[in-house]
Amino acid sequence: MPATLDYITKETGFEKINYIGHSQGTTQIIAGSALDSEYFNSKINLAVLMAPPMALKNMKDVSMRAASYPVVLQGIILVLEIAGQYNLIPYGSFSAGVTSGACKLFDGAICKFALKYFGGGDPTVDDMTRVPVFMSGLPSGSGYKNFVHYGQLIHTDTESFRRYDHGDI
Image 1 (cartoon, rainbow, N blue to C red):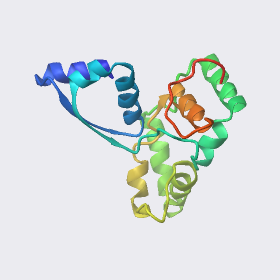
Image 2: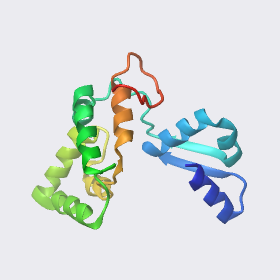
Image 3: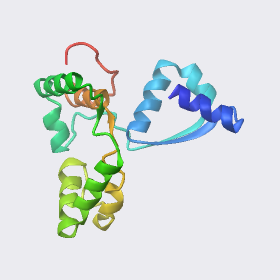
């Protein structure tokens, strides 16, 4: 995040920027600000944080809960590190094409199912006709340690945001 902020301020000539983040983008700002508040205060004028994955103890997403158990996380980490795959489900034209094609099948039922049961979608509040738009950037990829961190947050004693635990999972 510091490299990104430095680049933006250098290229624009502005000392401070306004930042809008969603999900993992909020985690980066919150964690960075906690670790080096002086730097982040010097670079960010305003931060708008949407859907921050902060306190996940009551997470309802089936796949995240299942993958968050320590024994499962350890297995996932072992497989990914042996394969040298540190970016979980990276974005690319092939993977985006598969997602796009799957969303067209059965009048979008596959993507609606995936959004509802694995993406935290809620048909009582989400406009399910917009599912193709929601899914258009998937898979977006992420470093696997982000998901390990979220798993750690699911299995905490209290609803709180904590630093990544590099110790035993």
